Length: 467
Image 1 (cartoon, helix red, strand yellow):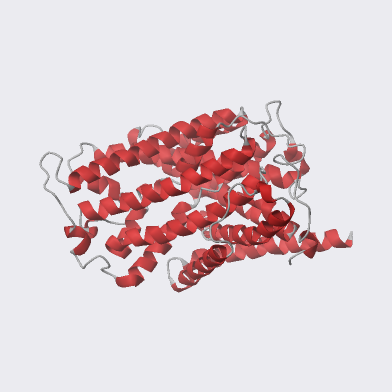
Image 2 (cartoon, helix red, strand yellow; image 1 turned 90 degrees about the vertical axis):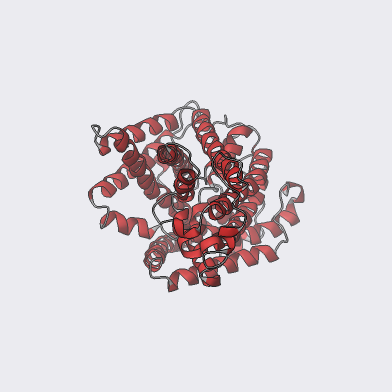
């Protein structure tokens, strides 16, 4: 469905988009912390236990592989976003590279992904809050969180930036503190602890107790935890200096996140035997309890609570900007283009919140049926988004080099070989999902959702050509 008319299309002029109506206000510190905090969530603090269970100490290698893939995708996205900043980020890049069908498809798929996952985050945070204050019903907490972050997103964008800055700062502080405590425990420098050495890395079945198959299964368990980095390139269009801001944010975020993820896993499987970890129980809590940190469970509950609210805030922001960008390009109702005096797309925010509320209600009423199908339908969408980012970068890089090489302030490493390698890795993950009984339903439902969007995009394309 590639449109050859886009092959030699001129690059856009300087600025996010011609006559971009969105207001600025995001500082470099906002983007840097958004890049760090957007991907550090419950998937790391809680979900990593499932990865350790299937890979053992080899989970470190699993995170290295998954993290390397995420770093490549972010480098590609950073290259395009620094050269052509846009509020729709990779949706705009896909349209410029492949045609309207690609921009439409990836934009709507990503929006759907964000508003569905938003329900999971709101419900998860409400469950934690309900545990602290049982007298307040869970639905009340959900309503409170949704209202608070709707208001925050309806006001100036700098308010969103400040929320995310402090949320991300707390998460980063928690991980750094965990790494320091873990290292002290490993070397026996905490009270009542003895040096651990490498006993747990090499014992209990060895470093790869389930062989390389365990490492591969670990990749499948953790790769989607890296989703969320993309929002920083969407936000860059509303920063004071989009080109420099996105380049700096991408450079700093990818390496630090890989350090936090891999460092955390290395500490966890070194301090305790991997067999001590259980799926569904935060490995961070298990380690902190083992080294004698009082109230470790409650401390991590607070961190996970903040992580969920941070992700909710970031996803609401990303969804509103994506659907606004789609409306700008005629791929969504034009009524969503209404912008406040401060440059906030309020109708786009409210439309995203409205669907988010529907998702929350479905999650509260039918978590094991209707909402489960919705969640499965977006389970593998991130892979499809990443694949389109890679294909777009392959095409746009050549065009930028030919027309405006000075715009390449951030370059993809080892182009084009590493881009092709990343695409091959994504195909491998899809193959793994097909052979995994737990992941296969997600892949099939997500493929169905993607196919449906592609059909709509194709019909729109045919109608446009006939008009």
